[in-house]
Image (tube, rainbow, N blue to C red; front, top):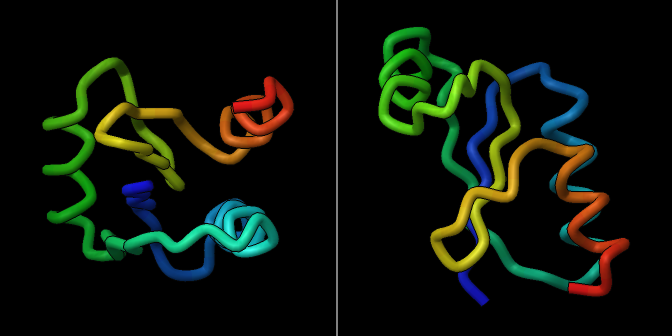
Length: 77
C-alpha cells in the first residue's frame, strides 16, 4: 500500500497520524512541508480548501487529516 503523509514540525496531529499508521504496521513516506513556501505550494496544488496538516494520501487518494484517517480505519478499510 502506497501511503504519503504531508507534515510539518511541531504538529501534534501529524505525530498522532504517524503513530496511528505505525500502530497498524503500515509503512509510509513522510513529506515535510515545514517551510512556509513549500506548504503554501502544497495547499495550492491540493485545492479543495486544504489549509492544514497532516494530509494523508493512500494509493494517491487524499484521505484528509488525522480525524479523517481515524474514520478511514474505523470504516474497516
